[in-house]
Image 1: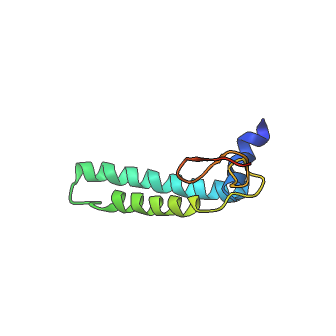
Image 2 (image 1 turned 180 degrees about the horizontal axis):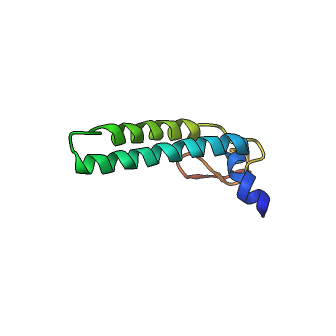
Image 3 (image 1 turned 45 degrees about the vertical axis):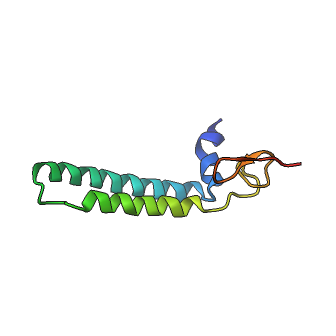
Length: 95
């Protein structure tokens, strides 16, 4: 169970635990920064006009590039796994 909680997801996206932790921390900190920029913008609309939207665009781009990482062969989401979903969510029937 502990292995599933800690290692399964990073392995599914082709990362080590440390790589995943670093990426998730970086994204989380950027999201906090964007949230703070929104609060500043709420009080002083002339400040941080595009900060949050630029941050969201950058995070979206990063997440989209990470989702294109092929799954390792032993991953449950690997294209070689029986009845695995493809990128559009359709199940691929394996003979």
